[in-house]
Amino acid sequence: MKGQWIKDLADGDAVEGLFKVKEASLKTTRNGKQYIDAVLSDKTGTIAAKVWDATAEGASKWKNTALLEITGRVEDYKGRKQVIVKSAAPTDKLLLDTEAFEESSPVPQDDLKAEFKRLTGKIKDGDIRRLVEAVFRDREAWERFSTWPAATQYHHAYKHGLLEHTISMARMAADIAAGTGRVDGDYLLAGVFFHDVGKTLELTGEAPYDYTDRGRLLGHIHMGAEMVKEKAAELGDFPPEKLDRILHMILAHHGQPEFGSPVRPVTAEAVALHYIDNIDAKLQAADLALERDQNPGNWTEYMRMFETRLYKGHGGDE
Image (cartoon, rainbow, N blue to C red):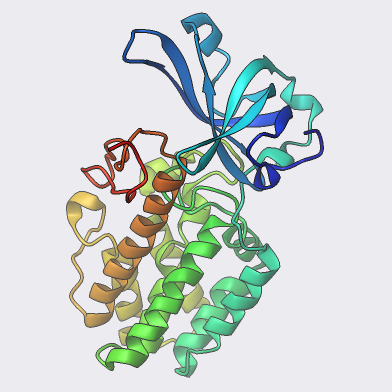
């Protein structure tokens, strides 16, 4: 399948090509045989993979982010595609265009950028809109924001993931503001646009994604608030009360001190922002879990993020 991407693979296809290992673990079947349970990726997506009759020695090359030359065949397993691996050999990463193996948002970046611009245009308050434009007019900040992942794992942990996550939240925020009339849409949208802007400094921008030293020391909530505060100061005449309400949303968006927020949400907009963020992150994580799960039956494996198993629907082993 040389020259073919993961998104094009179909049941029965022979596989022969390069893939990045997104995750892998050595497991044991009910009859005591070991196998490798893995997820392979390229920039078009991911696919599950199995290596039967595996050994600990053979599993050692299946390290996260490793590039492997894979041969095998695609099989359908309970409605989901997986690669049954025949052979896997490491490849010199330095000789390859690694961007071809870096997972990115399924939405083209240009479409994401255009939608972001459309959504920022919904802000009617002149001061708030001016601040939003000032933050993202900074070329370096915008380049990072439109390219960075939203996390190192769990949700939107891929190229352009931060922009995708922000846009998804902004759509919900606009609908909630218009549909309920109970929150100020301008403040809520500003909170959405700013809440994770600090991740452009907290996280590295190249896979395998990790935390920067400053990110571990300070965290994206603190750094994001500082970025917005500095831009407001540059504007010179930004109303202090408006800035405080916006900074509060950034500082409170994780909801509780134990989850990293120095203050709890105390405005309607901050409360809404916290739950919108949580909803979008959890739904995207659930999508990925259901897509990648290979557990027999109607339920996924135990998901730490949800503290339970997720229901896959009928179609598994009864």
